[in-house]
Amino acid sequence: MSTTTVDNRPVYLAACHCGTVRFRLRLTDGLNTVRRCNCSYCRMRGSVAVSANLADIEVLQGKDALTLYQFNKKEARHYFCSRCGIYTFHQRRSSPHQYGVNIACIENMSPFDFAEVPVLEGRAHPNDRADKGPLLAGWLRYEENRQVTGD
Figure (cartoon, rainbow, N blue to C red):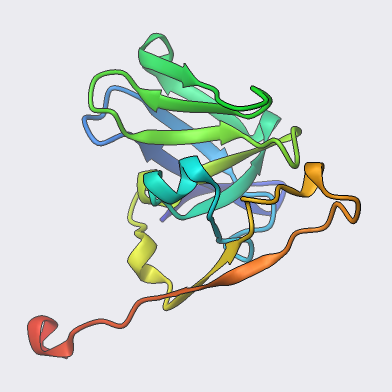
């Protein structure tokens, strides 16, 4: 999973599906903040994300292939590979000093590595509510079919 250690946090390598966009990152809270969101965009995108501070992502290759998508209030900045279409990371609206990173882009990781993923309430975004705190909308659960895997 990780390649080296910097400031006691593992450094991960990541890429889009076709390999055009490659980046390395350090996670803000490790894998403790794995999550999904149910806003209109995330619901359709379907990815599981973790957090990295803006300074903790370095695009190594393919920066020119990253395409920006913004919607609604145009505060969040969603990046995806213009060649294969895979969402790589986005600058978060609720925490603009962080990126949400597609866990499936991180080398040797999959959203299916997590039996349970919290789904945050994005339809009523924290920045649009008086309490400003995250609300839990529910849980996404994954159970492996052991007949297929042979375990």
